[in-house]
Amino acid sequence: MQGMITSIMLDFAGSDDELKEALADLRAIDVDILTLGQYLQPTPLHLTVKEYVTPEKFASWKEYGELIGFRSVASGPLVRSSYRTCELFVQTMVRERVKSSTVN
Image (cartoon, rainbow, N blue to C red; front, top):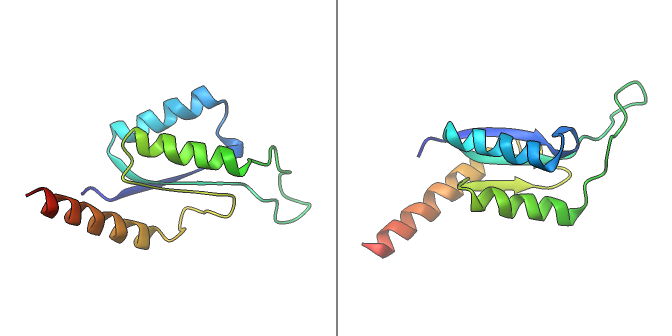
């Protein structure tokens, strides 16, 4: 298991095609764990929110990420790059070990 992790804020990710291309590029360099979040404006002095991403869209991108080979995807408006990544990594490692031991 490589264990490489990255994060994208969907409202800044560009078009759906650009996001698909970025996710494919990440898989090509063996990124295993992906977190997808939402930018939330901390103060009026910061950038304004470009788009509020729907729960359905977060779920769809999670499913897509898993479909193209990410070992684990955390996707939601409050997800950040540090979002339980250690926990996600360990859960994925355990799940894969259990799966490989039941196959053998």
